[in-house]
Length: 226
Image (cartoon, rainbow, N blue to C red; front, side, top):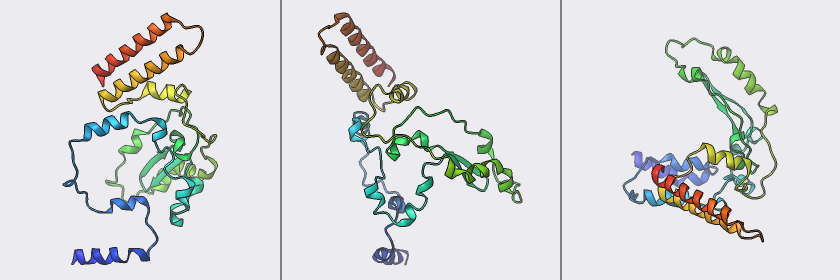
């Protein structure tokens, strides 16, 4: 009977507006038809992606126009920096950390502190607690959501390799999932730097030697720690 009801729902889905993309995962997870031995290759392919191969803005205007109206009803506050509230749960929302998702230039984000006390809260013995009063400070921040919108200049092309944000990002994050990806990046960056050094009239052999040495060190580090 369950399968029959499922079939009826599928046959009548055209009567309802198109669902959001998250609806794709409504069925039970199945892995029997998925090959698992290619994980290493997938990791290498992701590591070697170029900036222009990444969809930085997953919801462009052309896509938003085709979504049901309820999907964009809160668009005015998509970039608000505010707490998200649900009874005892408080989660801070910082869209300024993912500005490229909104087609804007990414800056080095400010440090944000996530309160451990908030994440320790549970509902045991608190059935009568007034959470709107308990979290009144966060409720006030939410009420001001329309006046705290993250914004920046429109990003016309991928961030430069030496952009301050990219320099910061490479310094604080683990960038690769595979040794081969780390090695390929180190060698490519080294060769690009050497090529740029040879474009001018004043070619410094010492500088080229330094770049080559740092490239070999980066390759060794990738083999040792990736």
